[in-house]
Amino acid sequence: MNLELTPIDSGSEPRRFPCAQCGAFLEYAPGVAALRCAYCGHENSIVVADQPIVEQDFRQTLRQLARTVATQESISIHCDSCGASYTFDNATHAGDCPFCGSPVVAKTEQHRELQPQALLPFQVQRDQARSAFREWLGNLWFAPSKLKDYARNDARLTGMYVPYWTYDADTTTTYRGERGDNYQVRETYRAVENGEEVERTRIVTKIRWSPAAGQVARFFDDVLVLASRSLPRDVTERLEPWDLANLTPYQEDYLSGFRSEMYQIELEQG
Image (cartoon, rainbow, N blue to C red; front, side):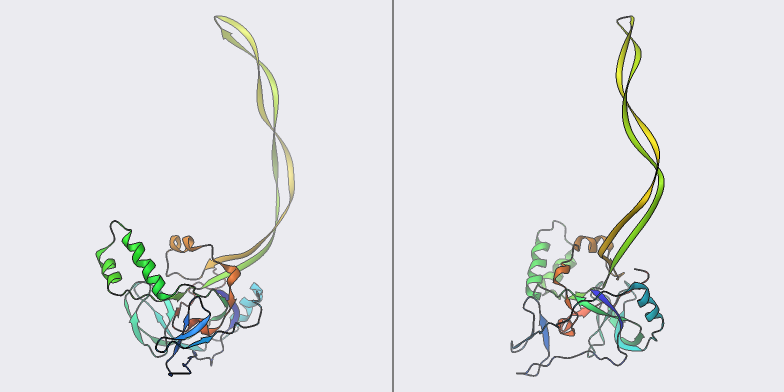
């Protein structure tokens, strides 16, 4: 997720989306840009916010964040087994950690968080993900037996939004040193052939050194830095590149029925 550099309002509460037909809560349906009722199938289209995804000034945001008091209360989880931190539904206060499976209990804490400005919505339905998981597992030679049992017994898959920072940098680098340029010369040498000394020539490459100085300008756009410590780095690197062209402005509709991890790596650390 691209993160907006604006603190969350201290009085904000997680939103619920009741079904207009049966009253049950709607959940985001990946791939169709709609909220769907799991009981009656009714759908509400998600109206994408008509607003640009604005990038923020890094140093200005650090100053703003330093002046913000940590007053945001939310139900959050910190797993002592793997160190993950993520949000929980207000009606849920206990469950299994989606990263390591350890049992955890929710608690209300105060946070000083920056609200996401954009997210990349899920595109794969839960049933499709479960089928792909089982197919992948079936192709493994030595899959752990517990993992096979988990897949056979209606594996519980939970979509999790993972936080990222994205940075832009307009850089200018000054350098000074020596530049080496190759050049070739023909030289004469003496060798012994068939017992006789003869004169031969060969091409030799040499380096001519000269003072060098200057500047190099380069712009780095959307450099992604994972803001989580919950997932192995080698795993997240294989997930890239993310389809940043399809980022959508942040809306809580896309989080309904899913979980979202809170960032563990601060903006300045990233």
